[in-house]
Length: 241
Image (tube, rainbow, N blue to C red; front, side, top):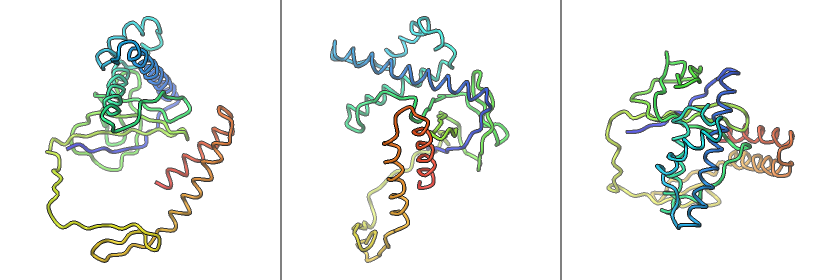
């Protein structure tokens, strides 16, 4: 069975510089592959597969030498995630894949070779090395993939996907079913008569979050004030979640 744990990480200045390069390369390769897929689909009615995207990498690295500075499996993970995004779109589970922006949340993925060191650090392959982490508990199983992200407030996180080797929990439809009615007087009323009050504190936080979102929309793109408003919104969103 697979489980995900998200931990805060604290890269050094040099590691932040390496991560910034990796974020930029992964974002550029995603946008480049998405554009190539769109163009190929217009011409032939077929897009690029994961293998097709990966086959373009050697030529791209020769043309854009800075792509070679990023750990190779990070870029290969971009191919995997973009191909999955297209599959999910054609199966009507998500919207069409979008181009990535440097102003949004940044992320890269390591498909293997990440280790926990002394329950207080994560060891990454390539030049990144060991990064201190705030690990709250022990984890059972083998690390499958690790996604490193930086939010709009400049904080870094690592989402670790574990596989403990146990079979997935089977969801059964047997047993007693309870209907839930969401209303105005009460937050929810179940079919067995249980009532749950409306959490008004949540409404206050939602209104506050909405005001900050409106302020962000009014700021000019690329401005210092917009960056500040984005950091405030990111902080408020993390408190509300």
